Length: 115
Image (cartoon, rainbow, N blue to C red):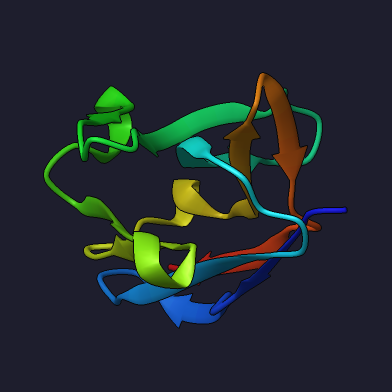
């Protein structure tokens, strides 16, 4: 069974930075894409950034130029560097991993940006 464990969330002032990590463990085979989503109260979960096994990245327009997704395949870990944070970035952040056609989700980590 594969598990994803996120870390790095917290409270930060507007303009600050946070780095999220998501480590995959368990019966790992070939991990295809990994990525980050966020979900604010009352809203749907939205894709923030994704990175493929080949290193191709894609970002939501709202975070382009501020967030950077990266991946350490040897450690089965994906990172999200978040800079110039805004209050509207406040949400629970979830990571995902696509493994053999199945999407696995982490438990989520809270990010709160104060104004």
